[in-house]
Image: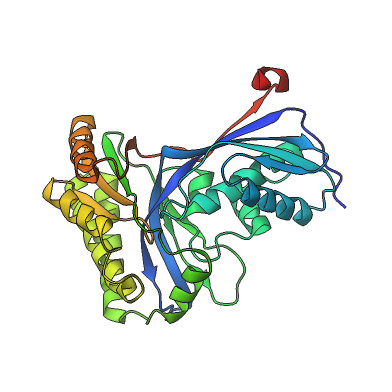
Length: 329
């Protein structure tokens, strides 16, 4: 039984939504599967508060799920105490924005802060059972920027390693459009989809890696948005061909697929679908270009969805410890 030092206070955590830019290899011919690239934005974001309690309590959106993550984390650390969790703002669920991982890690991080435990994202993810395929959300929680992770070895419980974290130029903006469409694939359906997807051709896997290493990453370091966006859009098309059997086309059908075509027409340098969708993103340079793109997207959605304009997240989750009397007031 761990004898934990207890922090008296309320831990407030704001976690960014995760944008999944693509997977690197579904077949795993070299021993590692998945791998991936992505980044984060703070609109939408998760905001919650955690404090000590005799038992596990939770309120707000996704409260039942938050309580389950809290109980799992407490049990993994051998802690008999509890925690009270208040969710002030949630990331839309089942939309390709990594809401489950950010919720799980935020709950675990809050309790870890209270009980003076390891706050590293890898340890938190292992304790609550996240990052079993993609580790982008985990490494995003730990710090911002563009994330490249290296996939998981078969029969290895460790999360995929972080290979690179690259700062994204301050002037780049990301417009995130979330149509009110059918939810993206998740949970048991996602597990089944990955089981049934055919392995992509080695040629397409090699081409994607070539684009990543010799085009996208150098362009990111150089701040060349056009080259970065072109490579990212092509990577998305390759990924889309891999996932087409499970989602009915290279992108989720309906509003998602239409918005991606629109973003290209409206001049976004890079466009794609985050994970299984329905979230769509478009990357441009500067606030004015972002507002124009967002305005066009809002016009197409006509109230049937949400549009967010962001700088990319330069940090991971924002954690503060509040005085209980001040926070409650």
